Image: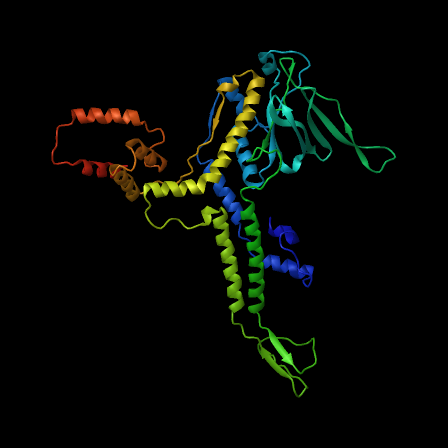
Length: 440
């Protein structure tokens, strides 16, 4: 996709014609560092399925809550994707407009139900903010529905309304005009709504675009592409014979091939070949490699080498915490946005919105602890660096024990085993602890 973008991603120098520039693009390999990083982070965020809970009737609705009838888990992936790559978008609970007061059962029978729509950053034309229910909230939102339709969400005298603007060609006028449609008032059980049921997709609380987590990685990826183009051009020219002549008149019929002889009539004519030393190419290659390393430092951790030595439990925890802090912010923000929207949908559907649960896993560790790392945790526990429960938590976080491991139940089992076990004086506590670590 980047190479297909042509001059948009690789600018053409004034001295290079279109055909030459196209050849440069064809010779240049694009390293997809930013997309690999994005895929890796999304994989970590959704390594484990989110926890979703609500009334059984409402859970069925959540399985088809998207505009395309997709489940709530797919919507969460869409939100996380926007947060990582753009950090701006909008979710809207599309509430049906009913002409009369109906019960929840009647609405279900007629198929009247809410949907949660996602609008990407490019579809958000404007957001006006005001004070609603003692909170700063949007009071007017303009959304590009398609090329000929704009959806306006508005609060009019404290009542939520929706209006569609349509691009229409006016007779006798070359330019088209945007004409407003009637204002539609979504209701629940015949009652109007006093807020716009929309949530802005952003890591901050401000309702405007801000820098996305992957912006720096994308910028470095583009610089790496430019450096790769310079290196590819250098290799192309240096891999071909570059003859030179002095003291001779320019000729168009000079060819280079085995068995070809050049003959010049000028007495002072001299001929030679440029010798390739490779010094400049090495510098270009070094710059490309440095940019690749910068991408890893800026957030592309999946491009960085794995740790080479065994780390203590505390060091492992600190390293993981530092690398996953930003990712956890994306997770928590996604949880908040999705929960806000499904609570709107639950309220409209007559379900108890306070019982709705949506929680993405905060465990981003995919690699399990090695035998040496497990022994290290046991040794640190025996040294009194942390409690028995903290040691178990580290084992669970490292994949050595299952996530549903019940510490209290395990203590009870160990107490029962100790009561039934005959005394053995020759088996020390330290040997037992190491044996447990090896068996995990």
